[in-house]
Image 1 (cartoon, rainbow, N blue to C red):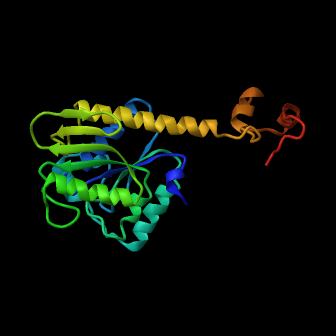
Image 2: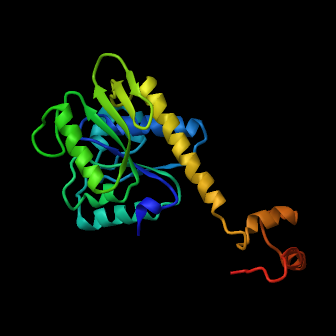
Image 3: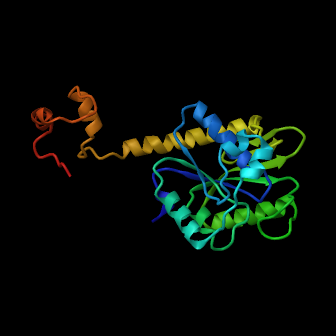
Length: 248
């Protein structure tokens, strides 16, 4: 399956460990939900984390969090789930990817790169400079044909910054600490970019519907139905269909 031709985007939140990826993805999905943007956060990491781990008391989170193993079976299931997505996805994965785990970003279409500045850990060995980490992530994403739409520096202090809004949203987001929600110009520009990306995909899907395919929900509305089909509606249904129109 050519995932880059899939109907819905799958946006990977990529970057090394301890950059604030879980907090960023939590903040993004909360903002998108408030705008009514249809999407799903897929936790592609065996650590049992979710929205709860940013909302609960952090001492309790440490106690409850259960890290699982990156098995071949798990990676395969994650990859297949991404490929068969039925909604736009935000994909939350680990910060260290083995060659086997690289199947996961390869199943995605886009990426937002979040790197601590300076990096405290690396996905590729010993932590180097921000630019070294950035270059290695770009190499990984490029060889898997993943389009980078965001490059964000994660900082513990200082000011939030927006350096560029298009084609790549770039800048800095500060204080991506558990229990917090991201703010600032770069963050809100990311939200807008994702909302537009997801809306464009939905519009393209609607435009691609074949005119010969019956949309049963639309026919229900036209016939004054209530959502459940009944035998007595069949004559009206058949009368509404043009002669020779394909039913399958």
